[in-house]
Image (tube, rainbow, N blue to C red; front, side, top):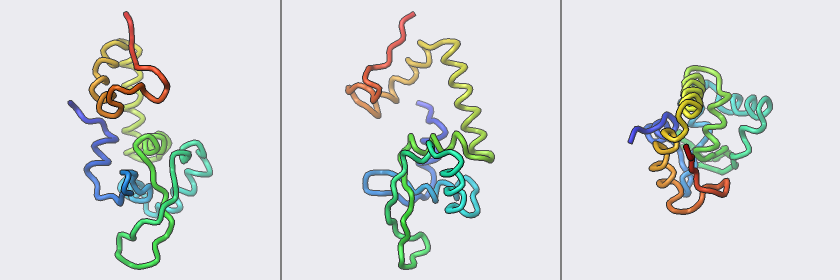
Length: 140
């Protein structure tokens, strides 16, 4: 199965992670080209407060090995998607293009898109219902 841009990005990078798999937003922003991730995160938080609702603050070890760990925002894949949607630059642009293509594909052939997504949904949710409360099904 072809991996999506977000999953590929998260797997390919050397990111600080929590024990439950959430990743450092600062590390993600650096990988996206941010020179000052704290400032970038602050600006995103002020301009698009809804994008940081899936972020928590955790003290992670510093990448440079120095002491004095500072609180670092961490997020899961859904949180990174929300940030990517408003992130300036090439990575944000690629994500918006991919999201637009997915929306167009769904509008043209929803059954195919949902069928293609079933293995990914099963991977993340197993046989449980998705968070919105119902298994995704499209009738023709």
